[in-house]
Length: 296
View 1 (tube, rainbow, N blue to C red):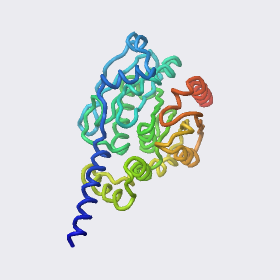
View 2 (cartoon, rainbow, N blue to C red):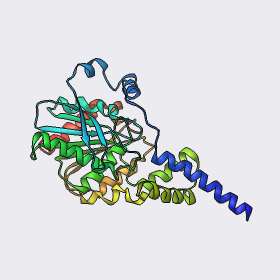
View 3 (tube, rainbow, N blue to C red):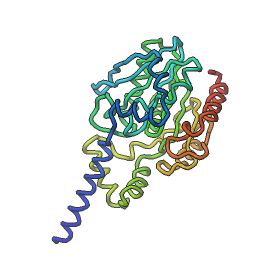
View 4 (cartoon, one colour):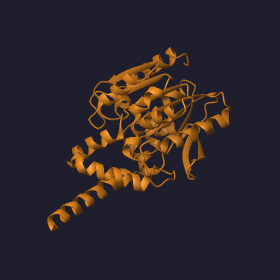
């Protein structure tokens, strides 16, 4: 009996630890986020400092504030860019030149529980999709209900874009870079690769803990089960060498998506490296996609 109790206690402690990593991921502040992107060569500090920008506060439907930066290009076209896990809006700035030169206004913002935004937990797109809707509504409030809006996301941001689009498919286009197709499947991979934790019973216990703390089961975050609802054109991008979120996840999403869609598997690229390692080709692929849907 003591042995059984000890085993159960150990499993509970391990599950609580892994759950805390899932629900409260370690994040970086704005100062470190900007410095990181500059050091990696993803932000040109002089260009960033010189471009006109506006700090914006957008109200989440969950009664906290979303912090963002808006780059006004005096256009009726706006793209919203969503960052990945643990980072903040500065990791979205690398995509700014892609759209700004094409005449788009650009809105970047911090997800809940990241950067300067409120919110106490991370739910990998479940609640984040409603925050993205608030950002879309903010753009419509500024430029009118007929404003042309595109949405670009990477990693968790890309998964959030898909979940949002399934909620209300009102944007003109979507670009999803290295999304996971299913949260539970991704957590099974990460728990083993990062911590050598078995799927059973750790993930099952974590799933229950996640439900208690956030109100969400892992199964409720599954872009692969939502993607068929989306009719709007979507460009899928993934690094060919991505081991963090397997490339096959994006291929599966692409195959299940209805309507106009394009797929770019970036060579020599791991997770969220597709643009950094293939800037010219990435830009060319995006240009072709926008011309195909008669936006650029």
